[in-house]
Length: 224
Length: 165
Image (cartoon, rainbow over all chains, first blue to last red; front, side):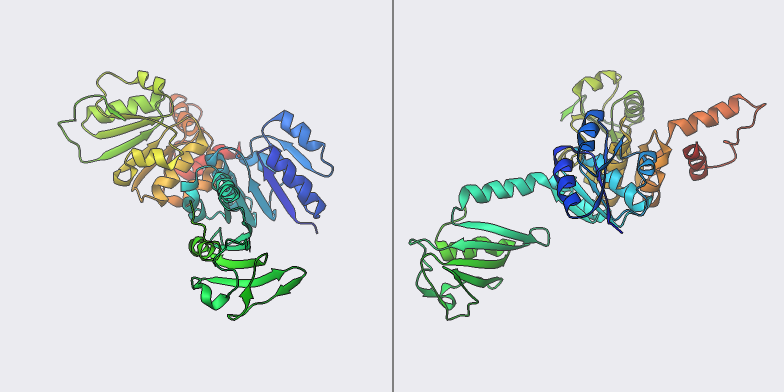
């Protein structure tokens, strides 16, 4: 049976998510308070759409949210999102709840209230912008454990202090691993005595707090 | 944050945060302040504070109480009671849960128009006031010839009864 996913509130994000999740074979139901948005969402093929306030139990009931696999709260108000997730979890027995929040300071609170995944769009976007603006030579590929672990790709320019050195000589922090060196067509799994050269792309696995230091050791640029 | 009047000299021991300055919030805050309690009243609109009686001796704070910063500015960490009376149920639920869960406030009261969301706050020891339930009880008293069944039962069960309708 298809996994049932509920997208509650939100418009642009809901649209994008719905289109992408349908392609991946999920059964999508969107609940939206605005009739206009509902009509637009209904144009996406295969989406079930319900008009109403998703923080009201009878709307979730109408939309048959019982035992759904995932509920994603995307309204613009944190309090609405909290109540939507709690209702889904406690009253409708939804297996996993995900919410967007705008006030990053409430992340811990939302997690304590039993919401499985809390996404703070503003801090995520600020992080991306910061990265784009300050580090031309690197890009973060993946973040895991809520941003605590990152996989980052760093290419070595001429100016980099790491050029022509062995990894062991770089003095990288303990919590940083160079998982792979991409050199032209080749990819090398390096050890301590591997030398890195101009144009090499290093794939770094690091914790959040040590990433900046590692980048500094490799590229010589200082964060901010 | 501004102090409407000089510090309350009677100096009640409690520190009560009231969220929402509607008719109920304004009356409650004034009454608490009149009996000598320390009160901080939060509302997102400065206009709302016009409802306050001139005798109100507490602190008013403009801001959205669903933001942590606003609650911190109100001094929620040292509050003895938090009473959330905005006209938005979800805001009241969140403020009450924040107060309970993050700040361990003993006495937390929330007003909820819709008793159907009960499962959300029941397990947290949050006390709720539901105007519809209170009104039904009152009507039950006013109509002694027609027993409506709202007087024997207490709290949860009554809420349940309204929720079913």
